[in-house]
Amino acid sequence: MTIAIGDRIPDITLKTNGNQGPEDIATGELFAGKRVVLFAVPGAFTPGCSNTHMPGFVVNADKLLDKVDVVACMAVNDAFVMDAWQKDQNAERITMLADGNAEFARALGLDMDASAGGMGTRSKRFALIANDGVVEYLGVDTKGVEQSSADTVLAQL
Image 1 (cartoon, rainbow, N blue to C red):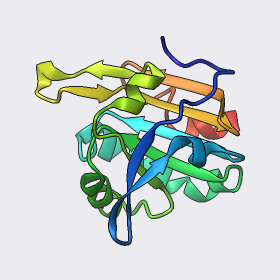
Image 2 (cartoon, rainbow, N blue to C red):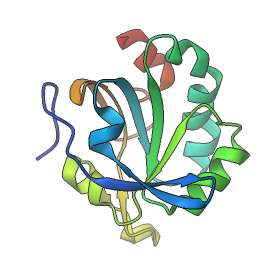
Image 3 (cartoon, one colour):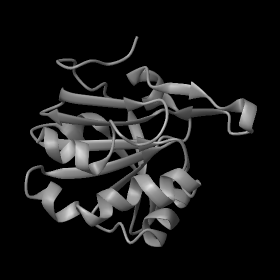
Image 4 (spheres, one colour):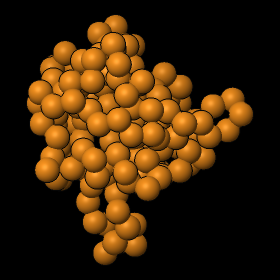
């Protein structure tokens, strides 16, 4: 079942890259008491994610962070890949979340089978806004980047 507006974000441990390398980050802590924009991509360094999706959030990071506490990007990749992609995209203001085993994507009901393209289980492309862990907006894209774009998210804030 896919998470919906009004639902609470599940508490799953993800990875982020810290000063000493990969560190655990619990979604329960990340979302607690904060307004958070989370957007997810099928894969770091993939063309649509690198050329279209991420750049909108990088360009609009200041506008978003004027309205929310955290802007985070999640992908079914490891923390090292997410760290390299953050640097490649100049996305220092965005918290990068590695869902290496797709546990969070599955818990949200937003996982997809990309094995036909050799990519295994991935996250669907989506964006959500949560306030203290409760979903206020959810936009899922099946093609393109419309429901999950930075512009769409900004319009929802």
